[in-house]
Image 1 (spheres, helix red, strand yellow):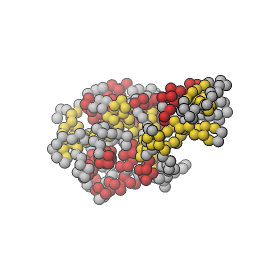
Image 2 (tube, helix red, strand yellow):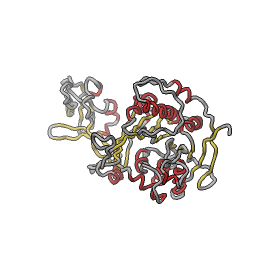
Image 3 (cartoon, helix red, strand yellow):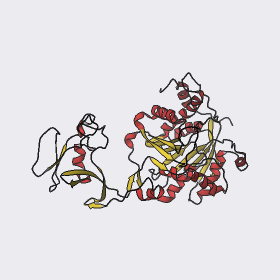
Image 4 (cartoon, helix red, strand yellow):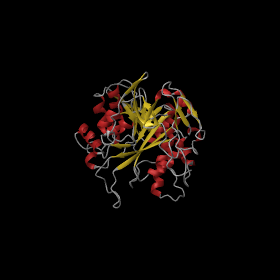
Length: 435
């Protein structure tokens, strides 16, 4: 384990059958069965029950867990705090979140992803836990969510804070691909981040394409020492389109061919940078390479076949106040502190497709369910969601006049919008098995 922390009791508890059952409360807007579920109750018990029915079935999990800002948890976890150099406050949070993350791995499909919102308080411990549960190799990204450009002086010293994190891990990194997005749409959403995409569209016998990146690896760490199989000369014949190779230390020239050596490395130690493609891939996909004469040299570019799309960047600029405005538009009053903006969740879940299931076991005001409905309306897909929210008391006295607990805010929000989106959902409650 990543520190002196005994997970034996936690894992033992994970395998215990929960002493609760799911009781149907209602379907909305009608009595028909719905794939969308809202479960009222503790997320730990809910995950144990869901593990049986949804084992390896969930495409994406998004959670916005408590950030451990010093407030006590309302969750009644019973794990021991053991000897450690970590403060009791951190240990309490680790005790709380670790078993839920552990169970979530059982639910993910082999090509599934989990997204976790977090701030500075527990970012490093979250990474260590997720490395332990999902494996270091299955780390995907940490998104920087810029949510307040004015900045907040949280600690009373240092710089003003403008962002939080969204940490992403996969069930199996070999089964996922790049996150492609429509650059025109994202240029409208975040013009300061998605700009300079005015590439000239070219065509060949395989269709339209644009050229963006050269074939060499821009990271000097990939060189003749670390990737010796990717360091070689490329020989190209512009008339026949034929490609040949030679070793960098061989003084070989082919008649009618132009020699293209690997790019010189600038790290002061190594001679060359590696190519991004192997010899085999270059020969197999030479139709996806573009050879351009530039002065007395030849540059090799990779063709991008989906010119309307670009790879999602790990910086997201969606102001946090938008989440509050969206919720106020629904209820005509402020009913929840710091809800996540719908657009943020839509961006994170944009890679999901028809019939995918999305899980959020810290549902809060129900933003994830709202985002799934909106995604379905935009692209005509049929994603479904499972939301879990504890019937946690509302501490704000002004808001508690309107709602009994946080789960009711989530349910009432979905009721107000689901007809507009042509959707429905089922409400269930975790109840003691003895009742």
